[in-house]
Image (cartoon, rainbow, N blue to C red; front, side):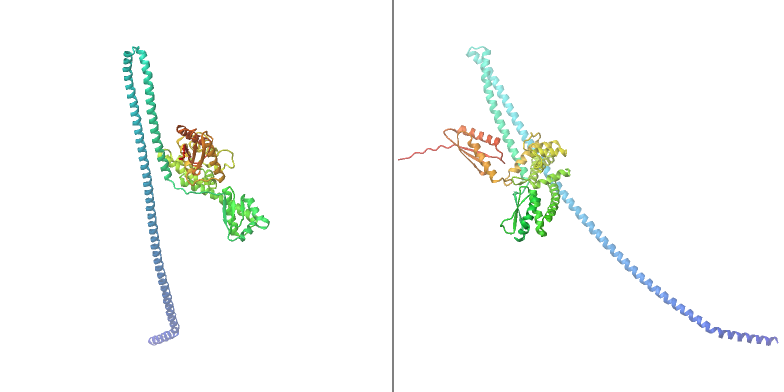
Length: 529
């Protein structure tokens, strides 16, 4: 029973297990398939992630390569920049070395010049000492002769010693005075000759250090036009355009038969420049009417103000003058539009600065002070049409306003002898001003003024008694005077030449120097029959 029950139970269990297995088998297979599917998806996802990782890896490698390449390029640029800076530094070093070499050469030349001057002064001193010793020796010899003569006169004339001494002293004093005067005159002539020679060397050296263009300003300016048709547009209906232009600019516009050009006339160089620039802009723009004319002229005036300041700064930089007040530099720039006998005053001022500094260097004076005094010596001409008085005095007052040193103010005020010069710099500025104004081609004068100067020169010469004729030649640089031989002898001719030269210096104003030639000629005519 028990066994049978067991068998039945076993069969029942087996049947139950088989049924359960058969019932669970489809589900198990589904689970297995689902697991495989999930595994497959996981594998695909893993492959996808691996692909992304590989892509990011490649991208990272590419970025790394780009960064390395950029680093190399940046390093190359830094290297090139460093090499460029090194080359520039070498260039600057070379320039500095060249400048130092130039300065050293100048200092050596100046030292040689000073040593030569010292040697010359020592020679002059020794020569004067020798002459003093000679005079002392002569005086001692004269004393000995005096004593001998006293004794001899006392014996021969039987005069008292006091009487003989008085006679001899009078004779010896006269002889010694004549001898000393002769020797002193000769010494003075030698010293004067040496001084003139040294002065010529100083002036020539200063002149050789500058090379200036020969310029000459006129009172008219030519404006080129694209065609003659433009002349009618400039004139305008019933002349309203040209009248408005002349009224606004203060110049005269001359429209003549000259093809493709018109003339702007006026004595004020600044007005002519503004008018020329404005007219060129009008022609280029094409819109020519009174309102447009006024607009462009005003704009041109503002532009010219900037040019004036720039011209002053360039002139100061060219001469090496720094640290000056801006308003003073602007006044200096106004000299660009001022002329004196056709010579541009700003270029003349730069020349004077160079010449004064050059001469100061030769004689051991202060070059910088000489440059400043020379550059600003004509600063009064920038405003002399607005303020009454001599331009030298006006310029000195301007410099006082800007608190410049008194030595510079006196040099400016005395360069035309309005006041007495009280320094070496003042005399150098006078000389430099005369050199710059009198060099060939620097200045010109009007025909009327030129003829008037020649006429005055001849009148001065003929105002003396004994003068028969006088001729001014060489553009007024020489005057030849023919005298009456029966009234003026050879000795009087020398005196006459001196007197005429002094009167010319006193009464006339002229550039440079004038040579006075007095000619005395006797002609004897006889006929053989």
